[in-house]
Length: 364
Image 1 (tube, helix red, strand yellow):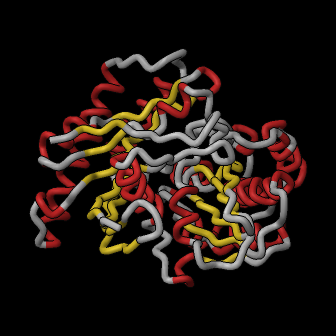
Image 2 (image 1 turned 60 degrees about the horizontal axis):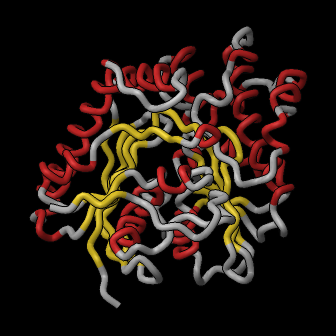
């Protein structure tokens, strides 16, 4: 089957930076990761993204203003420059790339109102790089009544084709989402709670660093049981999938009065509890949980997940996958599927009414 050389670009809800992956794939069973790169956001860039999110969450529908427009221009320009630098470093010409999958940066996600908002322009990126770009992966699904998230399960299934089933792949980005793949290759996927977002915000506020390295601060603190139980009693956890979250769905105000160490410990336990509570929504417990995303580096979080679920938890890197690249690879994979009009979302993953193609193609 014909393969494509594709770049995937992902700017995650953790606001740490842009991930890029180069992938050779047919959009089905052939998956060959070739290279990856990352570019961190500066403090000023993270602040502008945070301001755009704060504006967007107050809106009843996407409606640009000075802040969101500025953030969108910044996101587009940063992605253009990043891809140019990557191609130069790899010794590649633009003609070597068949398609780019560009996710943009989510500033608001409101499927309950029939919309989702990712800033950054695939058209601008295509025009500047002279490469076909696919963007806006979520809108068609949301407009049809789906959650528009998570989208990565179709790629997770391709990666896990030869693994014993059932298996679960857990992505710990800003938000946590899980992909369950059954014995018959069926898919169930949904956001299951916070992952790094609240922890990272807390660390930046109290320690001036963007994350809790290896969960060391959380390990030193105490989980305040009363607050933890109050946070995990949120009715959202009882909702059956499909369901999705945005970064601002849960807030850390309930821990604001705490000692900094106890605060990060309680927020870390809250993230782990979301995964444990997700198990009640699966038709069969997975044999193991394979963990990707930045949160896989947090040993305290992983230990809490293992204790809460009673299941083996394994870093996807142990399988030869790159846990930092999976989401970017997924958008490269989905861009190829979009070029073929193959589905990227399904009733079991987003609650779409049917298997649905997605993405807007900006040809050169």
